[in-house]
Length: 203
Image (cartoon, rainbow, N blue to C red; front, side, top):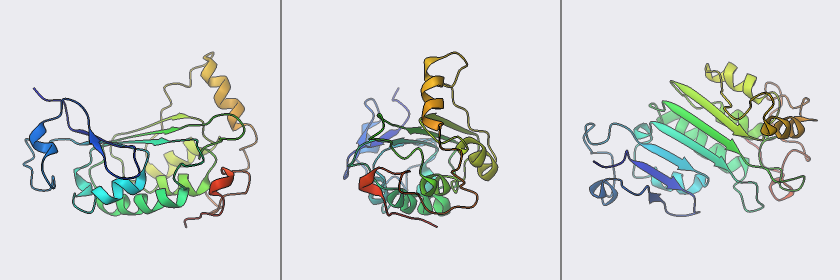
């Protein structure tokens, strides 16, 4: 018995399959013609949107049933604008996303990640998800309410438990983010992005 199909996009180019996936699927030039009984679900784990965009040139986005997004907190991480390109395509073509999971990484005051990016969260909210939205990591105070309003599903943060040390970390990160308003604003402020990424925008 093979593992459910699961593909990782964590390099700027290329991808790899989870160990234990059916090797005949891995060797196909495209998954578009695979019968449904052989590919009832497809999980994607992505931190490099351009790599996934390249894969989508030959594979139908409607094949994706589970989408996990990991946002690195490094100077080399993709900009919100690059994520918006992917989100625009998924909004139009990914019609079968059942479950969405998003993790915003952050590392101290320098590597703040994209947890304060209005541009990113507005793009993310365009995705059509049918069953569940799970969020984790460091994100601005109003993001859960905004995502729930736009996506029609209540985001669940399983790590945000009263009394848990992680709850304190999240609250510290959210301090000062109360002014961020994705309902009205369309651009990121100079203090809301890593310095290397400032200047990107997505309507």
